[in-house]
Structure formats: structure tokens, C-alpha cells
Image (cartoon, rainbow, N blue to C red):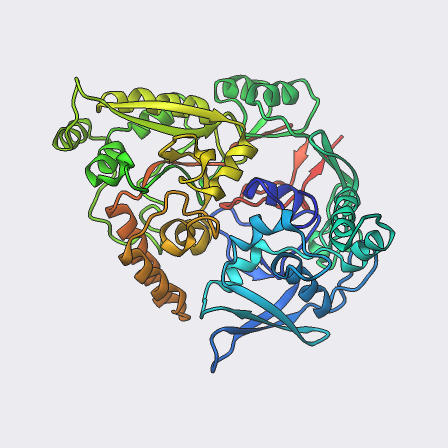
Length: 509
């Protein structure tokens, strides 16, 4: 989606959100030696009300205009909140709701105080709100209204859908890049916004062309032949040739987890903690890294690794210990002559999925040695992502009792809450497996209602440790976001983040 609220995961945010649009609160994207912090975006400052912790006041950045020349102000913020939260507004767009509301589930309304000040209200005290707002992007109400006024339709709803369809092809945000042409599923062309409000982030190149190529070998061939200057996720077995031919390889551990998310509905084989722990102990992650992925991963022992403020002190140590895994499976009633059948839904490619099919085939072989019979249900990435929000009880799960959707772990809601809190089960958010653990719920509430940063970090560390001790996921890998580029590409910073800043990049002749 190019309408302001991207679908299909954090990779889409990188290409069709942080380019064309801005959020109120943004991520640092220009640091390589630590995870990026929150920074002001279209809001310059924000504060929770001391007397009522459900109300926040945001001061807006003056002098910002949308690509169509209309002003960014408090009315625009209210309009953009309403587009995903208020069904009775003309601009309400169901296609943008699912991917947005599930990422900021406590936000209920926005109110203009004056032209440069808005008040946002949450349904409960929520210290995560500023972080959640990195997922809400500001589209131009004036540009949309032009399309709406010209649109044909039997009623207001039909006209609105027609207006959004037109907007998608000729979008207007406040971002550093402007849309110049768009052919869905083929190419998106962006040109620099000379009038961008942050002069340090006016792009150094005139134009950027984005081409979707789902297959790693096709991407690699496009780079080696000179068709493109830059590819995401090159084929690991082509790395020696890429280097030998003088191309540059970049990677950096990023806040990103490649997991299996378990179903916890009645009858799921994963309801036995011995089985969940056995799966975690049966995978040789170092072997996966050094073999199949040619070094391009970090073994995962949780959502966060030692040294991270939200790591905590789990007592269950995730490592490769096949004898311990086999023992747990035998205690659970399984063995060489009695395998446990599990079914995992995965994709053949997709945003942040690394190499999902070969990686799942590796797990299939590894877990066979611990008495698992792993069946793979391989579907298209967009479908898998949609199914993720429908949950394990939905027919779309196709009998699967685990799903393999990678997740960004930059913020506490994305990394922990949306999976572990019982209230985040579908259709609210991404608790696909319907985890219902009172301890998790209690710790989520504690973290959400703690507004002092160090104390909130401590509560989140407690929550993470509890999730590892419960073997809530099969934790496999952290991505390192490998990219390969022509030596002509200059000025690129590989951040410890999902999100790359394209603005400082230049291409020499």
C-alpha cells in the first residue's frame, strides 16, 4: 500500500512509508553501532498529562507542507487518526486499518487544541504510545479531498474507496521523497523533495526506482548484471562471487527475530512445555548460520540477547542440546517409533523472512532427530501476513499449529506485547496462537503503566525472561539485514535498525 499506512511488514515501512511520509515520532536511522532511538518527527515534543495518564499533548513542527503544497497542522493529524479509527468519517479506509490499529491498539481519538497542538487519548494509561506512533503516517487531507470531490460512486463509502485508489497512484505526504510514477507489483519511482523540512535529509540523488524481486537468485543476477545498484538479501551462496566482482556487502545485527510462533489453542501439540523446550534445544543455530546462511544471521536465544536492557535473566537457556531435547520428548511420550506431527505455515519469500523455505527445511531435518515430524504449508507472503492477523483458529491456518512470520523487535509493543498479552489475540493484534498466560498479562500491564524509563525497562526485562522460560516461541535467528551494492553507491549507513535512510545515498557515475 502506498496510501500512507503500508501493509506487508516492516520492509514495506522502509520503502513506502519512511520515504513518502513522516510519522509524528520517528526512529533514528543514521547510527550503526547501537539500536536507533526515538526522535522527533512531525511532532517536536510530547508529554503525558500528569493528572490523567490517558491524555498526551503533542506539539507539532511548524512550516511543514505536504507534497501538494498544503500545510501540515493539527487538522491533518486528526484527519489521519480518524482515517484508521473512526468508521463514520469520509476518509475512513478499511485497507489501512488492519495494519495500523493492531500496532497502536490503545489509541482512541485525536483532538485539535490549536493549529500546532493536538491531544491524543488512549483507552488506558499507555507509556508505549509515542513508540506506537512511529507506525502512523501523515497523508495529505487536501490531496485526498481533491480525489474525493471528483470521485464517482453510489454512496460516500464508494467515493471514499475510489479516492484512496486514486491517491495510491498519486500520493502526497511530507516525506523526503515524492512519488513520480507507480505500477503496482512492478515498480515505484520516487524523486527527491527539494522542499523537505529537514534540510539534512533532502535526498542526495534525484531519483530512486524500487523493483520487487521476490527470488534471491533473481535479485543477485540483477545486481551482477548492472540492472540495479542495490539489492536486499542477496543469495548466500553467491556471496563469494559478489565480493570477487567488487560489489560491497553490508550487514549488521538488527532488532528482528525469525521464529516459529506456536498455537496454544485447545489440542495444540505445543501446549506441553516439554515439547516447546525440546524444539528450542534441538536446533543447531550455529550450524544454520555457518552453513546455509553463510554467516548472515545471529543465533537467537530469545527476542533480545544478553546486554539488551529488556533481556532479563531467563532460567531456561536456549542452546543446542540434542540429548536434553530427546529426553524431554521422551518424557512427553514420544520417541523413535512415535513421532509428534507438527505443521508450520511459512512463505517462499517476503519482507524480512530471510530464506524461509531452506531455513524451514533445515528445521524439519533437525527436529526429526528429536522425534518431530514437521510438515510445511508453504504459501505466498502476502497471504501468510494476512493469515497472521486472523489467528490459529481461523480456517486460513489450514491445520497449522505454528506460523513463521518474522517480527521487528525495536519497541516493546512490537517485540513482546502483541504476541504475549491475551487481549492481543486476533482480530485485535498478532497473538496468532492465542497465548493466555496471566503472568504475561500482569507484566504487560505493569510495563504499560510505568512511565519512568528505567523502571519500565525492568518490567519489560521481567516479561521477556518469563516468555523465554515459558519457551513461548521457537527462537531461531536474528537477521543481519544483508545488502549488496554496486561500488558506485556512496554514503550508505547500515543501521542497527529495520529502517534505512536513503537520503544521504548518492550514486557516482
